[in-house]
Image (tube, rainbow, N blue to C red; front, side, top):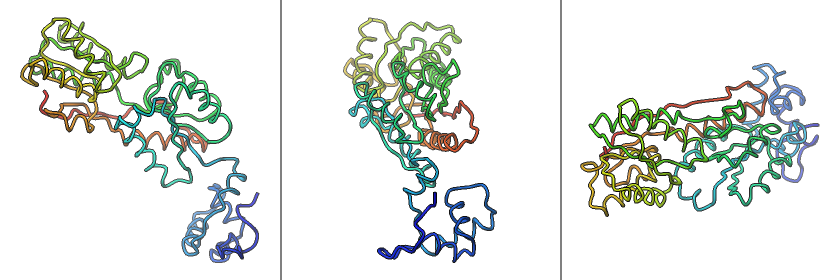
Length: 343
C-alpha cells in the first residue's frame, strides 16, 4: 500500500510523495519507507527526506499510513473513575500532561476515556474493536480486572500497580508507595510524635494498601502502636469523614499521616473545628505535593510524586510496546519529602 496518491494533488496544490522524492534525490519507495519508520533506510537518506519534507511542508496521508501499517496511530488513556473525581483530582491532570508531552513528538494521537464502572463494558468493547493501538490505564481498582484481561490481546500500560500484578500480569509505572508512606511517617516519629493515626486510601487500590503498610512499618520499627486506621477515598470530603471517625474514638493523637494531600486537607478543617492546632497539637504529613498541599493552612509536609514523569514514562513504554521493542515490565520512579509547616 502506498503512502500517498501517485500524482500531484491538483485540487489543493499540496506537495506529494513524488515531489519529496525529487527534492530529496531518492526514490518514491525510499520516501515511503522513511515516513513509515522502516529500518531499511540509510541515515543519509533519512536526513535527505526529512529536509525535503520540511522544505515542501509535506504532510503524509494519515489514512494511507493506517492502511499500510495496520495501525490506528491512536492510544487511549482510560480513567476508571466518575467525572466528578476526575476533574477534582490534580494528579490526573499532571499525568495526562506528561503523556501528551511525550506523544507530541510521535505519530500517535491521544484519546481520553473517562470510564466509571457503569461504562466499563462499553469502554472495553471500544478498546477491543481495533480503534486504538494500545491503552494506558490510570487509577486501577481491584474490580477493574477486565483491563488486565484486555492486556492479553492489546498493549496496555498501567499507571500504578494493578491489584494482581504480583502474579506477573501487567506492565506498569509507579512509585514505591510503601517507602513513601514509611518516609512520611518516620518524619513524624523523628519529631517525637508517639500516637500517629493514618487516613488510608481505598482497600481496592494498590496505593491504598501499600501506604498503610509503609505507615505500619515505620511505627513497628519505632515500637509504637499502629492501630488507628480509617479508610477514605482520596478526596477532601472522605478525609474529613475519616478524621471525625478517628476523633470519635476518644483517643488522643499527636500526629496524622494522610495517604493523600486531598484527604489531609479535609482532615485539617475537622481538626480546626475540634480546637486542635497543626502542627502544635497534631503534626501532619501526606503524599502528593499538589494544589491541596501547597494551598493548605498550614502548608503540608508531603511526599512528592513525579506525576508528569509518570505520564511521560507510561507514554514512552506504550509506544515501545506497540512498536515491538522490549521494555521493563515494572518501572518505579523516585519520590522526595517536601517540607512544609504541618510537620
